[in-house]
Image 1 (cartoon, rainbow, N blue to C red):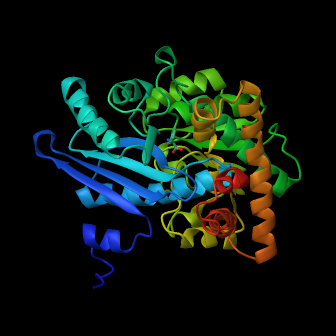
Image 2: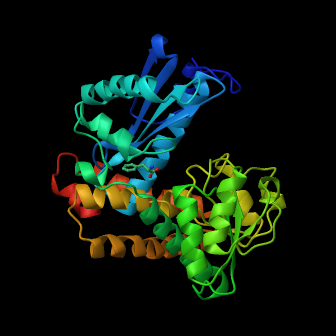
Image 3: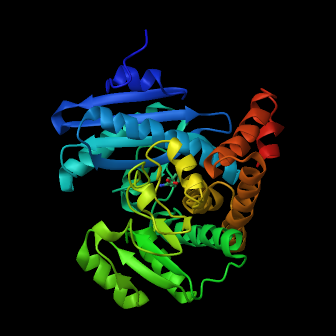
Length: 370
Ligand code: PHE
């Protein structure tokens, strides 16, 4: 039975999703829903961050988990990590603190433990290494515990470094040089990743435009990076070389793309496109889009590289710089096939996923694609 396209039920979301399995739990005492999207285990255990967020409806939370878990599959495949794609969403009525937060995370940790390693997680929107410490008390499958607790800690700086490499690869493609000096970069969302990106871009000589719904935060970053603040409503129409969305996803839509005044979109936010058609809209508008799941892989390179693959800081730095080569290959492929960069990146990820699927049970398959 197929559901009507405008049906926002769990049923229609799950039947339209091509992932492997989803875990759903409602916690009446905490007025919270838990959704774990396990999109693919082809390259290894489904792995992705856990976000805590307030949604208009539980179905919106489920949709976020399912869509984000698919992006993690693409991210892991292109980054060459021995992991599949997953994501967890804890959908709450208000962001919990204190006791309520502890209870929620303890219950969620039991869910992760019950999955026996087929889902692994790390921090994401509204969760931190301290939350990972708490989860790790009840489950082994947790990345980015605090450094004091033996983990790799906050991945914000490495994610920002990776996005800077994505920006350089894009500048090279559009302007023939990765030079930041003289280029204008609009950073939307100045949290841990956006704030670090603004600082790195300013250090590199770029003119930095800063935008955040929290004006105090914007002022603090403006002081340290000598950036110019623009209002949240102006982000889309502001003239700049690079628009770097680093807040929530979904800012690239049929409505916003015609109003963009940039040459490049390259940022850290997950799921920047409202729909997959928006990648083609960007192409037609003559804007180079660095797919988000390639640009923002620094977080997983940091976590998985350090904790699972025992990388040295030099190896991590080389992997972050490798984002430039991955994007160059994606841009070449998009030119060759006359498709959007999203389409080209999906084709490259698909080839890696298929090469593993083609040799089931072959233990060398995973190391071969990495
Ligand atoms: N927030 C990270 C991302 O979106 C998720 C993550 C962090 C996953 C650390 C695993 C380990 O890429």
